[in-house]
Amino acid sequence: MSDNIWGYQPTSGYTAGSDLTGYKVEATDGSIGKVDKHSDDVASSFLVVDTGVWIFGKHVMIPAGTVKSVDLDEHKIYVDLSKSQIKDAPEFDQDKHIGDADYHERVGGYYTGLRTI
Image 1 (cartoon, one colour):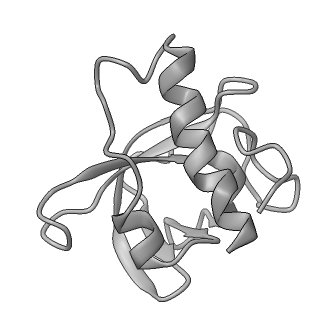
Image 2 (image 1 turned 135 degrees about the vertical axis):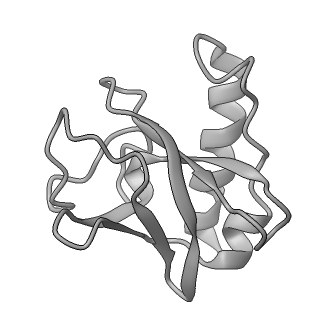
């Protein structure tokens, strides 16, 4: 994972301004859902993934620093996370994801903590 959990890795293939909505998201051990929303704001880039029926429609916010690669031709995003890590992630909070530093710190802390596992 990237040292900057909220920024895309330079090697990911992501181009600023690309619309990733609807892209399939692949964990290290299989498909987890589709991008419902994304942001490429500096120091606050993330994906909101709709996991669909896989974990009963849960939405999770995944920091851009976990993105290994973006396949623009196949419309797929590969993340450096397992399905269980995503399943255990804090649920996306529609009301707090923008402008709430505590929420970003909690979500970022969860993913940063995975680096030591």
